[in-house]
Length: 245
Image (cartoon, rainbow, N blue to C red; front, top):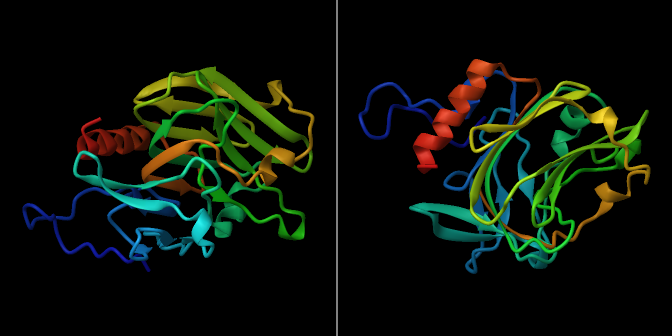
């Protein structure tokens, strides 16, 4: 069960405010004000999943832990990567992201100082039983890529120009072959075919553990389906309203 109880609207005492888990199929919901277990230095060992799926993000190695940073986005805290090797494990997401399964991802993140092709996504996924790490977003100074891996086709990717440096919010859907990516409420690509580009380098990219870009994460989530356009609108309105983006 989620660690976050919903007893009423925090400001009015009326019905609970809308939350991302109100969309069906939520398999991960992480928010920086919920479910954080950290040490006295702010190093985060657990970021607890607030959906019913218990896909908690964890890290036991202090050198790879994200740092809890208060008041990073206005009054909202974030989890900040060190630009070297910070990463968390959320292997419970593997069944959702495997092969050509459909999913939706959303996140609110600031990426700082990308130099070359870097990996701004904070999770690693298990390769146990031959299951590849199947989801990755990477960037350089002006380009974002979405990688998808399958046993049948290896790596496929989509690429688009985007200027980084401030806070961005993403909604990315993947329907087995076709993907739509929205950043800050606007589409970078719509129903793009991931089979149009192939890395041809096996699955090596998904084994990479050093994340050489400083990321500040405030909230993120996954669904095990392509959420509808009205739900995308609800999700974006929630993000815009909550974070004044």
